[in-house]
Length: 194
Image (cartoon, rainbow, N blue to C red; front, top):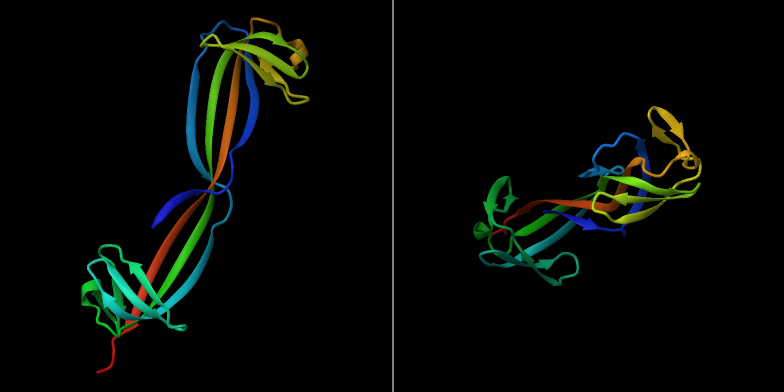
């Protein structure tokens, strides 16, 4: 069984204005989505042990060991258990069979990253802020990190050197941390003695 579980809130990283081009090219926006690893996976294994009390078409009732509490399990189609070396389906299990399930859960940290490249025409610039008109006609304000340089016709320029009318290409990277959780279950056991 696997699914993606959002563990943390949305984190936004703005990599502002990667390239400035003075040429009069037409503004375009592109978007790229990807999911990338963000660290090592962690696996944990737990064991459940119980005696089969009753079996249905897609369920199993067991008395857990130790403790003696009764526990109901939904069983996925096609699941098998290895009973004394022989693979058996749910319908082949007998009451009194002792089952042990080893469940390995693996959590892999990932980042869902969306990169949007937007082009617009510079309207106004200060050392820390610029305003640009995007291709859809919307005016947008962006914060420029201290010391950030723009490439203009092969030269590195600061915001104080930018001029209205320049075509700006901005890259916005949005990151959302998620965790991929996968489970693998191995069931084995022994039949009741007659």
